[in-house]
Image (cartoon, rainbow, N blue to C red; front, top):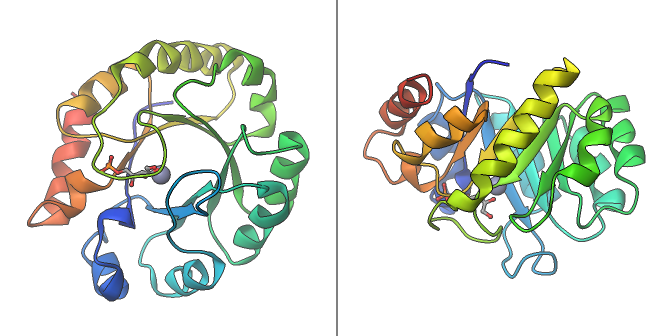
Length: 218
Ligand code: DX5
Ligand code: ZN
């Protein structure tokens, strides 16, 4: 699958003015919404009521990244709220295949996410059940961290498994994506790029999206 998508993370946006902040990224492919529960990760953000409101006003589809314990219980409600793609962590899911099927049955794309220290190999057999594989390029929990180059071989192995399977699975990377690191992630085979501080830290977020897009296709 060719590179396509820049998904800005609103974790770096002004949470008091979310509707305005969403309008500033209306050229994005989707908006990445980080849900953290202070259990799976040591940080707390927003949950279903706020995500449902964002869904109603966002000019672009929602890409939810659930950094939460017990996604088997909570994730389907995000699909019901109209979130276009719902990604849960394999380290937290009790039954990832059943959960992915539930998400798809509710009309969402299903994504599985891996922390930096989680090997991808045990999960490759699950790819036919998924629309997206998220390879974390930082430890989940906070924006503004440095890109972990140690994730590059895993991206490469995942990309070659996806290419070999012929499945339409997107390979998303999240964490530390800049105009510089996106080149390496794209070269390794990532196709969807999440960027928080690189987009919202810029004066003109839409211009930052355009710069990232052109760097990814270099
Ligand atoms: C981190 C989140 C990321 C974060 C990325 O746990 O999953 O989506 O917002 O932020 P940057 O691009 O600043 O690393
Ligand atoms: Zn994220």
